[in-house]
Image (cartoon, rainbow, N blue to C red; front, side):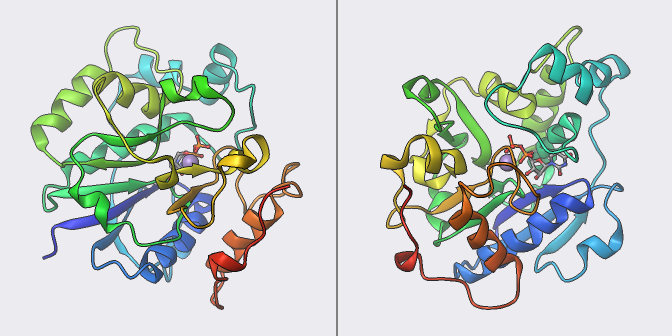
Length: 264
Ligand code: UDP
Ligand code: MN
């Protein structure tokens, strides 16, 4: 058994589409590590067909009713509005916390978690040498973004004691994690290690910080907010990135990164 894995999470058929393209991208990156999709009962079996990965059935975390209500979609959006972009209708904030289940995967020494809306564009196996907890900053608009991590890509060390400590810390009376797992992980690992931003290059960088875009340096692109498989109002401005995702989602060839256009 190999002791390294790239792991993603899917709780419905929409994110399973993301996971299919993502796992193909990891395979094309030439990695020897395992590929794992954690999925819940909310995913219809047809949606998982043909995904090139180990499929592991999980349950959502057994959080309290009060916790679940506070983190319900309508309540969370009202208490902590999203002002920078739109979350798709199939995004259920509460489901994000199931990411923490990867700490139960003790058959692996190191895991790289990837959101289902990411693509691995170059081999990232170096990440398995990073310590826990390593993530890239949440950069897509301004310098202030460096204060926060983005939880769409991170390096973790599965460990049951860590998992239990996390579940305890998560569902405290009155606890409200405004950006769900992201806020929680930032709080649980205040001394997080920073990864280069190119390990989690957010799609809004293309529009808001075009000077940071680099096809030479990008390792992982992350379609935060609107998803490339949705019809959405930013798709035209993000066209080359949307087309790139569709190339990975299909079965044909994927473009060479050096052939892609630059923003602007
Ligand atoms: N996710 C899921 N179902 C949901 C919400 C989230 O499977 O209803 C998983 C999926 O892997 C997704 C990740 O959690 O990529 C985080 O959500 P998303 O990527 O939509 O958040 P964003 O990157 O836009 O903040
Ligand atoms: Mn994401």
